[in-house]
Length: 209
Image (cartoon, rainbow, N blue to C red; front, side, top):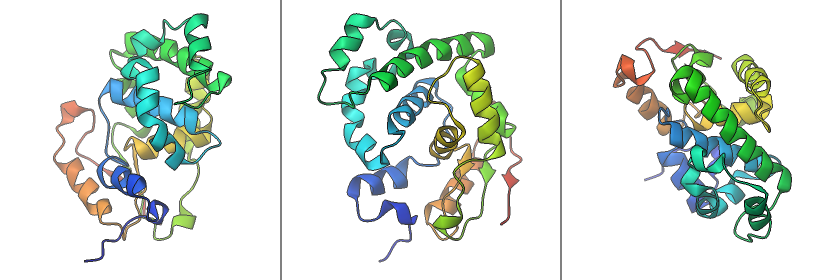
């Protein structure tokens, strides 16, 4: 039986698994949100397939994506990461991840959780797009631009609109599965099961294109 998926999966088993189980699923767990922020930082200029293949090594290198620990990384730890062949040895991205962990903790302190902060940019409900062709999917949006501007104001790095939009797609703030993809209705159905206290209210915003 043929399963219709978003075209970017191609025939890569790792991309298919990620697409089928994670991409577009709304996140309300701060540790997981921080993980996706780290992954999108390292993804800048690279393919997502590369990041997924490095994911376990990045998890090991960055303390299981615990922002409290990453925020304490010093120059000695940075030097160790720069010779770690299992990760992407980019000094700017490593330093940005540490800075972002510190900024992440400040947001948590202000909002009670990073989840409370991040979901305000889509009015606490996922945006449902209705794309029929992959080439129609944008690389940014007004919501991503607003998020980017605020993150940068708060000291986040590698937080441009394109990176923010990729994060929003991955973390389920935006449903950018093609309408022909089997995951599109599954994810929409999952919204209806969410309780208001999960951070997403019952009303869903839909954009018809």
